[in-house]
Structures are given as structure tokens and as C-alpha cells.
Image 1: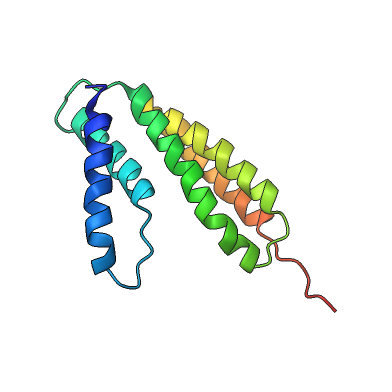
Image 2: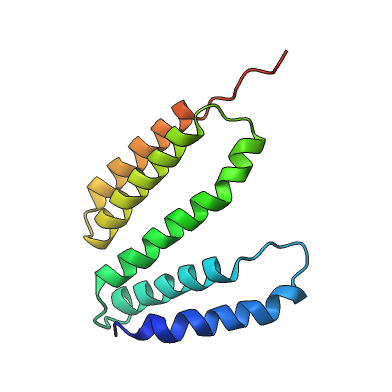
Length: 133
């Protein structure tokens, strides 16, 4: 089942590419959607349908989604005039890494602790810059 992404990613990419012009007002990234839907399908296959799928491939795809999401958030953070963008990016990357790891290892308490710590750190780091005089 390690080769399933080779089929899923291009197929989903093509579908998104075809329907993208038909959806007005929604900024879809075909690559982001393809990767995210692929790991969601693999997770469902692994947990619901009990199909043997390597958590490693799912983790790699999930990590790609964390970085992709972060790259989409960065322009928004700059528009919001946030002070500590690099710190926020670091929190998201490290929090995302350990959240994915604990999720795939099914260590639910550690996952919840990681999410809470990351959320608190993001709230603290999300301060805006003072207005320019």
C-alpha cells in the first residue's frame, strides 16, 4: 500500500485542477488539497478499514500539509502585523511534528498536551506590532 499515494495524489490533483475554475471565490491549491486528501484517505484506510498502511508515509504527507499550511498563513500573519512571525512558524513546525507523531503512535494524552502547549505558545506569541507613528 506504500504506492497508493502515487495513484491518489495525481488523481486528486487532476480533479481539483478540473473543478477549480468552476468554484469561484475559493482559493484552492491543487497540491495542498491532493496531499491532504491523500493522507486523510490513508488514515481512514488504516484506522477504519484496517488496511495495513505504513504510518511513516502518512506522517510524511501530514508534515507536508503542516509546512504547506504554514506557507499559506505567512502572508496573512504579515497583513495582521504580527510581531513574532518567525517564533510562530517555529511553534507550528515543532507542535505539528510532535502532534503528528503522537497521533500516529496513538499516544492520546501526549497529543493533547502537545496541542495545548502549542496553542498557549501561539496565543502568547501572536502579539501585534504597535502602530507606526
